[in-house]
Image 1 (cartoon, one colour):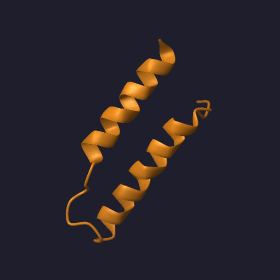
Image 2 (cartoon, helix red, strand yellow):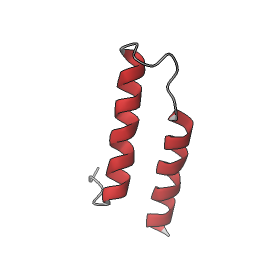
Image 3 (cartoon, rainbow, N blue to C red):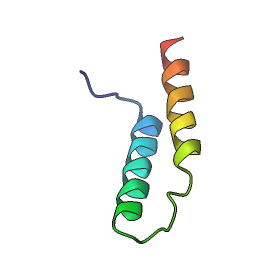
Image 4 (cartoon, one colour):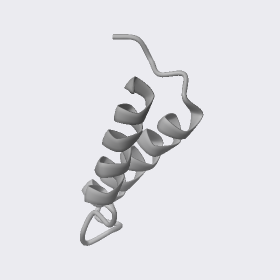
Length: 50
């Protein structure tokens, strides 16, 4: 699989990773914005394909 070149998409993926790791380490009691980030990543991937 090829890494995406889109900077906004990479930023969203990094934010998702930071949010998940903060949740797993107990910093956040709930992974804030997880669903929002996933929807934004999915929408960005669809817009790049179309």
